[in-house]
Image (cartoon, rainbow, N blue to C red; front, side):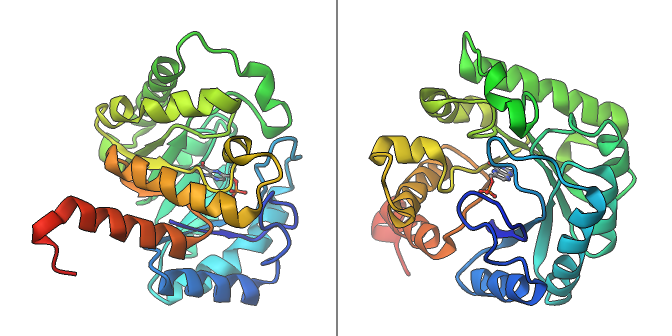
Length: 265
Ligand code: PMM
């Protein structure tokens, strides 16, 4: 899954693709590099970010989704707003990616249920502006799994069958440093719950902490590729990344390693 952020303020690529044509061109480039899904978002979720007006969010994402879906791209919309989700599906998105797992907008799950879209439910403990206040865990993987199971049940109660759900441990959301590594170590358990699992480590702060805080974005892309390969090895259905080429190369290399003598290219 390649990231297309149509925002002025996302932490690693804010402002680069605010113009719809630039965003579409970027998305098509990512598809050419091997992305199977493009995740289009109009609201930054970086720590401390303020919420934006949903109408402004739709102005940003709908033309980009429309154009990419018109090029037969499988598009997801990264939104916590039910109205934006419904409008995005009408514009051609086939996955609603809600990092809040349907908690930020009480109308989200019912809105998604009324569409044919699949839904990503992320592990989340509160809005970006305050997300670290609730980063208290006795057992990180167990609590993530329990809370995501709760969201899966809420989705089912709203009319979304489990087969339409993709779970996401929400790396960086309400988790500090080592809590993110604990969440990743818990991936096999999360995968064991049944639904597909999506993992997003791309360029996040916890990678910078491992590499040294002054690590360049390019070095975080290398660390992203490594963590994405390990997530895939542990059963992740998809990985969400900014640098598709690096992760695609890493995944191919790992697949050749796995294939051994059966490798055919
Ligand atoms: N991370 C960001 C945004 N959206 N969606 C999912 N499903 N999982 C994530 O980990 C995730 C996400 C972080 O923001 P960015 O777009 O600036 O990288």
